[in-house]
Image 1: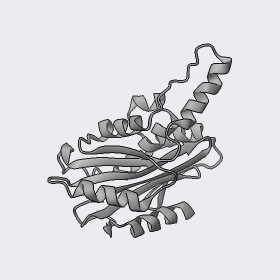
Image 2: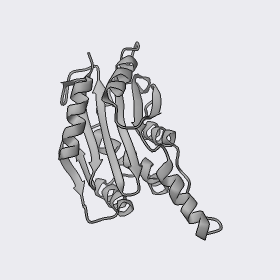
Image 3: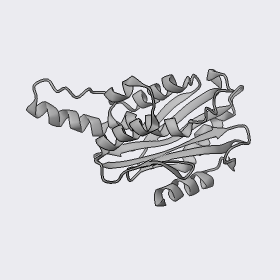
Length: 205
């Protein structure tokens, strides 16, 4: 059996880890919030500045999710990444199209595809296991739990970073969790029911 051992979320300009606020400022517009949250975490990853909002959201949530380096004990091939969202890259695509109407060569760096989010997280945290990003109408706990269970049942698998990273304009909804085959941390059973409880509870915080 796999266990949910940590969670992270970004909603309402609030970044949390295991339900505890790491950074919050509802007065900021989303782009400024992302920069201020990055500064507050004191991360050192220069490519953050050229990421689009989708990538920045995933990056920040993963930074707090894995802050205590829980994956350090595992071989890189033993840890996977499974993410999903509803809007794919539409937020950045829309911004780019709007900019191109007024600027012949927009300076906005087009860094859009959801697999870029996955790629950045894999590079940052040295993940070399399964890598998947699904586009679904809403967070589907049953689908995520089922797929992650399949991943963690593979020989040698030890952990999986999974969840939801979505943004459209000011609306942002991020829920990441770490599932492991070892019993530690939150140590809740990795089931669709538990994921729905955590996702809904974080939403209501």
